[in-house]
Length: 251
Picture: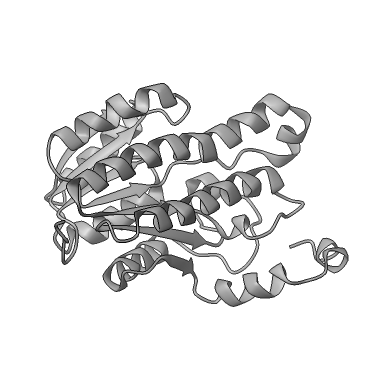
């Protein structure tokens, strides 16, 4: 079993156009990362992300990946690992959905669940198996504080993240002692293009703040990272509130 030390030299991003993921990768390139794979649906945005990272000095390749097509995951991601060891897999894909619309359209709600949870289970297991075969590496999964307790405002999204969060914790336990490190990241509301114009609960954070927390968590070998850190206390308090009172908070 080989244990990697220091910042990752090679990174695979699932969700290659994610603003949070790109902020993480920029930070890692400034340290030691030199090889980056961006996995996502082929698009001008994916190509632009790759060009941006190349401009920072990294060797960047793209691979077609669709969270909603789990049958293709083993083949698509297997090609990446066949090219050489991957030190870090960053799972950063997902969709917010539209709660009001999705409550009236069950198929739209199912699409949120399939993207955020089913697609993550499939791709997460494929990557975990490849990392375990290597004997080293980290799997970092972007969850959300919304996974902690259902909110009236976004319970469809929150429930999908709750499933993802629980899956990631269990996967981390399953891989404990194999040389593979699993870390779940629970940001609060992140100000990105995808959330522009949304009211969002406080405290809000930024992709750069999440990137800083991810890098620190990797250095520490953390299993759970909250962004900002105060959310851990807030979530603990909210988790233990009686349901009747929680329902009245409009959090």
